[in-house]
Image (cartoon, rainbow, N blue to C red):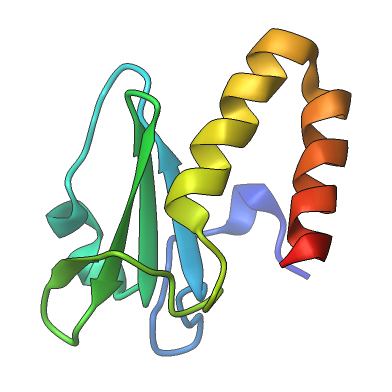
Amino acid sequence: MVLATEWNGIDLESDPPPDLALEVDATSPSTPGDYEPLRVPELWIYREEAIVINVFDGQHYRESSDSPTFPGIPVRELIPEAVRRAWQAGSSVAVRHFENVLQEL
């Protein structure tokens, strides 16, 4: 086990990137290019009530209409809808609705 005080950063040789990264831009937006050194296969950026799916092609990110991690799930529609519902009706209501929608797919 490594303690947070002992951590010296990411070593991509021994610490592979996650399958998916999600960035919620509120104050300091970044670009997909900022993630290229990490080589995360899929990057979602949520900004201004929309989600953009980016897929890493080995060198750069390219925008995609669908998520390779969650094929057949309309991520670009479901996530913003869930966030709006959470703001309007509360997070518990939003989560239950989101789970129901996923079960219907």
